[in-house]
Amino acid sequence: MKYVLLIHQGTTPTPAHPEEWAKLSAEEQQQVYADYQALNQTPGVTPGTGLQLPETATTVRVQDGRTLTTDGPFAETKEALGGWLTYEADDLDAAIELASRIPAARMGGAVEIRPVAEW
Amino acid sequence: MSDLEAAYRDHWGRVVATLIGLLGDFDLAEEAAQEAFALAAERWRRDGTPSNPTAWLITTGRNRAIDRIRRDRTHETKLRLLEPAEAVEDEMDDATFPDERLELLFTCCHPALSLDAQVALTLRTLGGLTTEQIARAFLVPEQTMAQRLVRAKRKIAAAGIPFRVPPPHLLPDRLSAVLATIYLIFNQGYTSGGTLTDEAIRLGTALTVLMPDEPEPLGLLALMLLQDARRDARYEDGALVLLADQDRSRWDGRKLAAGRTALDRAAALHGAGPYVVQASIAAQHTEPVRDWVRIAALYADLATLTGSPVVELNRAVAVAEAEGPEAGLRITDGLDLEGYRYLHTTRGELLRRLGRTAEAREAYRRALPLVSDPPERRFVEERLAELG
Image 1 (cartoon, rainbow over the protein chains, first blue to last red):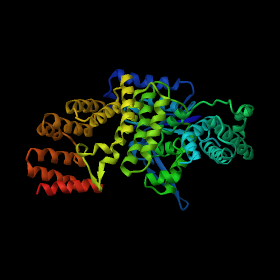
Image 2: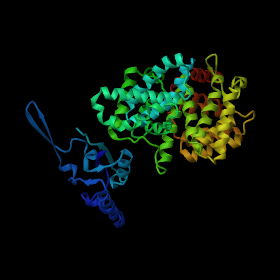
Image 3: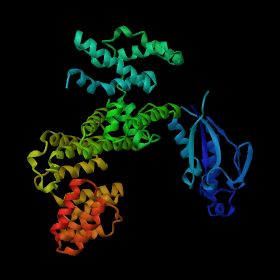
Image 4: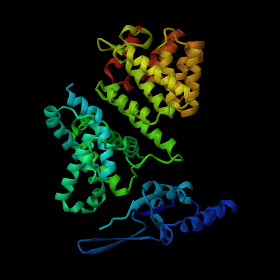
């Protein structure tokens, strides 16, 4: 089975918010980097690209042929997507286990697991 | 109950579980099982019940599924998986199939499914209840229940929920989900008066057979049996009868004994989890003279295990019996349960015993808008009338 793990940072401190990030101890910061590194090296994982902050998002809709452009992400800013990775795994339990190792899952965000549609 | 209905009851879960294991598809397995039982109704009546009914039903179901797959080319890949199995078709009587009910139970109660879906799926696949029966028990339209089942099965397949007993590091969490689902089924039956209590006891019994070394399934089974044994004595002429006033001759002695046996087995396995403790409390309540000090201590254990204020409230009741109403009342003072009817009825009772009539009245008045069950409502109204 192939899964996409959608990472929602929520209130997770990240380097993109230097003030919040600075509240973490040096060890905690190192742990976050180490965790992501370990995740990316896990067999079956294909790292996704990181995303800039939801504040930089632009959302586009087309209504009656007109393109409507609005500032901000489709979801609420705090629920917006922060990044993703794909994971080739035996089953959902394996994907849940990987998701629980993503720092955002324990630091104020959440990870959504979506099976990839196979046509 | 006819022999066939009994056979259905006894074998359905086992047959469906093994067929899902073989076919890897819930719908296909259920349809195949249905066909096998329909065929059994015809053949067994004519030729007699086979020596190994389970193997007969599974083999027949599997063969029916293979026929169906052949007709439906979209299942071609599945057919390849089944071909080796089909070769042993003639050995029907000797065929031994693994009992995969446990795998099925853990799949149905996977936390990636909503609790509603877990309950429905467990009752359908393991219990063999029809969609209509489940819908009726949970007071939802049949269409809603049918959709719930379809969605749950679709999610199992699409999201890759594994058909297996979880590995040891996941087992404690996953087992509590299974126990919670079975207990929820029991409670639904207990409050609505349906046959779901029997169904839950059947599932609980099966779980204790499949996991004989785990104390918590025994604790849950004991708890359900001990509660169910007293069910008939709870009401008289539509009015709620408190435990102390219940007619003990109306308790079901067979269920009480079975409950105590299950609890003894759990104790022998050094069980001290939440269901074992709850069953121990239920067992104390069936003693001719209740040991309130012991009951209060058990509730203290349970409060530590669960962190639940409702458990603290129960402890308050036991402490009030052991040490007097004032001690119980002190415990209720700190509880954040404003919207919980039993907080107010408990306080009302304790205040009444202390002769603090005005406060007791106030407490029962607060309970009144929170009570919807007619017998309970009558009870609160009677208490209010007594207090003037």
